[in-house]
Image (cartoon, rainbow, N blue to C red; front, side):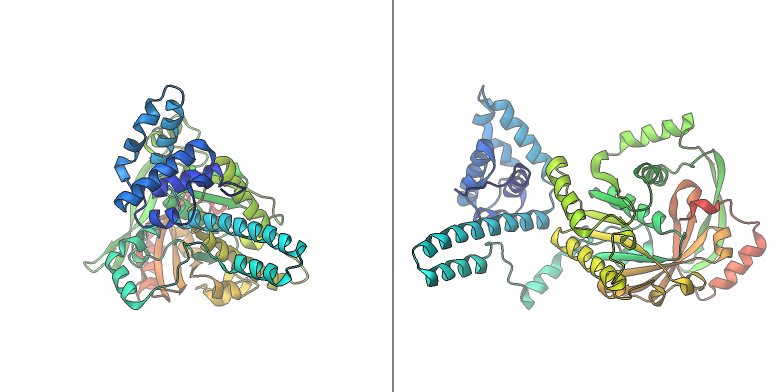
Length: 478
């Protein structure tokens, strides 16, 4: 038995994987001993699961509670066992396998190094320097049994037969053109939006957080420029579709398309009266929506003072969140890295390093990282924002897996329209535009979407002549 046992939270996740994870259960069984788990109950449960795996070569799955019938029937500890069984069953679709295995590797590495150092000290005391060096080198060389040597071509071909996993690792954004190509937040990748100042960055990030939350992902939204309460209010608006301060009749743009999905023209639709958040009817809608949503604690919003957060502090916060709240995010929304603590002496170099570290964090924790950055002055005046308009360090683009830009002329803003441009996509088609209709009065970054047609600007001119403008207030566009 190791001197330091696995933490209670990690033990619980590992037990859930031993009980339900066909891919990783045997790997865990062969990597650590039952005695390494936290507490007597977890050790006993691990031992029972190990015995089942050894006999049947697969996890018990739905039969998991049956393994502990006698323990649950025990008068003294039955309630405790039932609580742990219920917690493990609840985790069966919630644990983040990649992150749990990374944490297990960290724990295992710490134990190996500590054991190696203790053995080396004893050998040094005996003047056996060569053997001490060998012991330390062995401790540094050895890896967890979970070590993955990589894929061969036959294994790649086999993996292509279940591409549904790729879809499970990505969040659809409710933008059809992008969703078909899986161009959304993806585990172990970083998505970046470039937009001019006060032009939709925060609303985009909230839209992404909402979509991930509705897909039952755990979402952590970190804000460096808005309070937690204000950010939370925007989430409520986006989820429920209410106005901010006063009830009003809402109109919105919808796209008429041909059979091939190409934009023909733009219509205006009456969306009816939308109530305000604090109106009695608005409050009633919120309560009804909250009752229908499961897992309200899957979204956490955290604000840090502008210019104070470092990547190290972020990692410490994530560790504390896991330890105290048992919360491991599947998606981290960062609004936004340019407002983190950056050394002014080497500002551009330091900023680029922050983006590298954030992407590394996504890989390490098996989560999606989604953030935004500001376009430079030239981009603010440009009809089409592209990656060349990114402010400060261009390495932000090279580091990111997917880059969207956001553009909107004054005419489009009046009409409730905007454009996304897929500037860079590491794994899919890029360099194409997507048209969006929006209604920020009700917190909607996307009402409808279509691929940009060649005659788009003619359609906009026609709409400008026909329309008297949108009722969308300027202050709500960021």
